[in-house]
Image (cartoon, rainbow, N blue to C red; front, top):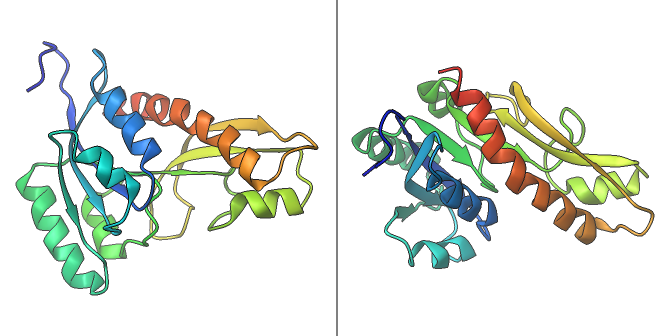
Length: 194
């Protein structure tokens, strides 16, 4: 139940695979007074995801699909999302690739956060690759999901300076802090236009 009058909060689902730190952050953000979203549903492809432990302490509905039969699972997921009247999906460390059909159904309403300054370093192991290439900067990007991996329209980016002492782990921590600030800002920016 949304108490703030005059602000229509968009029913949102979050898809996770791991620790769920961006999920926790988005849930916190959704409870702030002027947030444009309300988190109604979480999906994980990993029953051992640490994020699930956090969800058990909340009243948020969640389901686990292993994506072994992607087409079947996606059909079931779309049914759930339709039934719950979900209008937006936020991918937060979700390690499965959604089908073109699934992406089309949500027509520009699936967001992802990626730990690099796209279009550089798409895909996995971004921090290792960035360090290996002696980059001076990295960062994170919130973008709209399209059919091509990490290639959708960029909503916002945040640059992070890499120090000589950084390794992939320290860089990952630095960037994660910025992800937590960037995702809510990107949601505000995108949803202010709807």
